[in-house]
Amino acid sequence: MQALEVHKSLNCVTVFLSDCEAQLKKLQENGVKGPLYGVPVSIKEHVGYKGHPYTCGLAQYLDVLEEEDSVIVKVLKKQGAIVFAKTNVPQSLIW
Image (cartoon, rainbow, N blue to C red):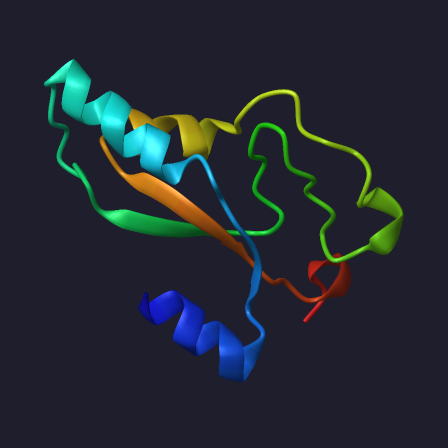
């Protein structure tokens, strides 16, 4: 997995999403292929993903988990993309 190799040198991934295989299986079972079918996509850490925190780089929000996916994640999934990781952001998205 190339993302893991890049992460080893840059420390850019905050979490690899374990449900990405379930996403792909659901797409395959559904049979409907959107324009992004099977394309692996990483999202920035500040984008909401159900069951994971979105902290904007602030440690005080590490324990606050999202109750549902953000609109962008819902659209990506609906179009067939496989969201597999969340990547780092600068603290408070300042820089």
